[in-house]
Amino acid sequence: MDDTALLHTYNRFPIVFEKGEGVRLYDDTGKEYLDFFSGIGVNALGYGYPKYTERLSEQITKLLHISNYFYTKPLISAAKRFTKASGMDRVFFTNSGAEAIEGAIKLARKYAHEQKDADCNEIIAFNHSFHGRSTGAVSVTGTKAYRQPYGPLLTDVKFADYNDIDSVRKLVNDRTCAIILETIQGEGGIHTADKEFLSEIRNICSANNIVMILDEVQCGMGRSGRMFAYQGYGIMPDVIAAAKGIGSGVPVGAFACREKFASLRPGDHGSTYGGNPLVTAAVDVCFQIFEEDGILDNVSEVGEYLYQKLDELNYDCIISHRGLGLMQGLEFDCEVKDILSKALDRGLVLISAGSNVIRFLPPLIISYSDVDEMISILKEILDELV
Ligand SMILES: *Cc1c(COP(=O)(O)O)cnc(C)c1O
Image (cartoon, rainbow, N blue to C red; front, top):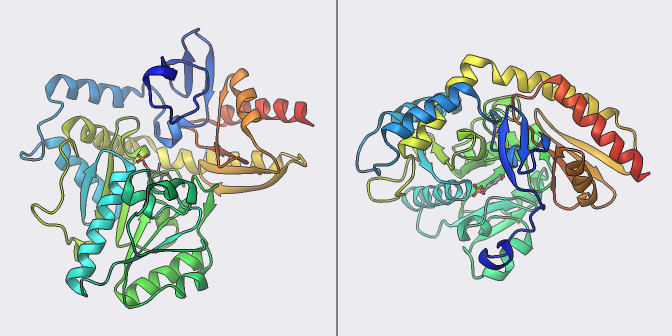
């Protein structure tokens, strides 16, 4: 049915997943898997986290959707927690990461048009970035294959090299309205921004009244060991985009800004589902669980252990090891898809970033022994390869 009824945009692995429990997944034959990809970094709390499931079940029985014409308590509570945790002043909830990026771009352009002039359109983005698949988001995504077939896209987007501040400086001019980047590049192969690079971007943006947008869709919500990755850099962006982990499984994203940049006013932006009571109940309870259950401490501690264990792997085919917290990557001198298939055979779910990087994005609740188990499976596979 996949071949005939679905638009063939994914080459799926031949597995039918049926349920999850903790950090384990089960397919339709009952086979158990250890999850080290959490649905591309979405299932931050793993599967069946009791407080989460209870809160969502309760919300389902009350109200799923009402639109943004009215208030709901989960929306307000989620907004309070989101702004408090991020240091932003205002938030708009979306249904995905791409939509969060769309909102951030619209907000930045409107801000620049009002503060400077209508010609101030240029956006500086980065090579090897990933910001989503909608037309605006692919316009700022630095991978040609994602952009090229859909032109003309948003005009006035220029690409600089990540962690190369001179390449950014060369592109800045009177018409620059925003600089957009991931604090840690995910799809591009797990590249963390250098401290100096990020603080120089902050300086450039402040000096020229350019909107600094950080895409925290993948690296946010605790994955780096901080609630948001920029909090480990001692800087504050002007606008952020989030999604993936913020609802731990329900489709929800958000863009948020500091008061000064809140250019969007009644009628300027909207979304039918955006921030509906089901998804904002999820966001609300996720932030609550992070606070009450010490999730960030677990990420830091187990993340460090994972770093050490991956560093200890001694194979010629491994070129480098990058990342932090529970967002790490191992770069190989060859394609990794065979390794991923072999891992699935042995009951371990992993994903790649590009063709030659294995990406480790486990649920944020994994334990030391889960890391040990993953490492021993990975070693078995790599031993077979050499
Ligand atoms: C996944 C991702 C997006 C897009 O999110 P969707 O929910 O798939 O639209 C945007 N930015 C980054 C950094 C991502 O990892």
